[in-house]
Image 1 (cartoon, rainbow, N blue to C red):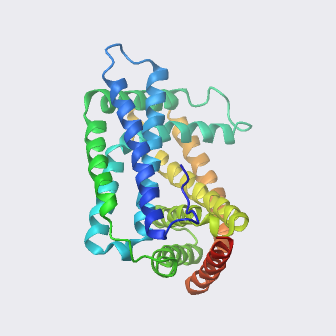
Image 2: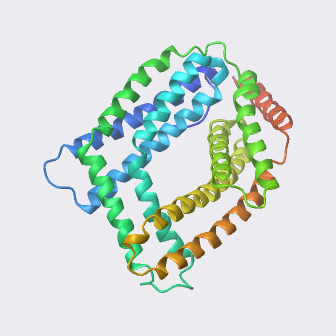
Length: 323
């Protein structure tokens, strides 16, 4: 199940194939999740963790599909693009609560691990217990008491049936690169420039940049065969940038969550220490993101688009010569 183009098909057919494969896998995973939900025996902690990971995988596939839709946005037309983008956006949101609770706990554990040399293992007992209970209660409520998975499954099945009718017959590499790819790069480029101009960018600014970076990462993965070795490394570095920004955002969300739990904390000193560690780690991550972002967005959007188009043309010529 390759999330990338192949030589043998038109780009329109390839986009449909990629979208179909991702929806197919999401449908399969959600179907299995619903079967687990219908099991009469009470779920163990291991069951909950496994089901949470399944939800996470489905959300990643939904993000991949949204990236595909953005790549051919102009070719789909405003009406179809709006319908499909909103459909998959809402499907992802329906599953987000489970993942968000898991991320809070994972982010806390990673922060503890990063500063292990500076804090005692028992330093945040109260806070960790709050996060564990929040994660478990959220998972049980959403996965057992609500019909979230059923609703998302129905939406994705309906969306999959529409994929063969996407009007992409006239799509070609040049139009897709000129429109979808350049637009995503340009928005990431502009967000990067804004961040670099700020001494203390806001959480919203950094999160918006992260979304642009992730779309570029997905698009580079789709286009990897155009020049495999180069784009593989390029995508890898773009993914690293997205991870820096994602970790920063997760810490910002953790900061907000723990400060809303003040009344539940027995040891108030925990709050001061955790806030200090969060702020310190966020500064490290933002510094790394800015440094890497300068390299990834070193070209203007026009120069970037022209360069990828040149690679595309060479790839097409070589493909024709080999046939």
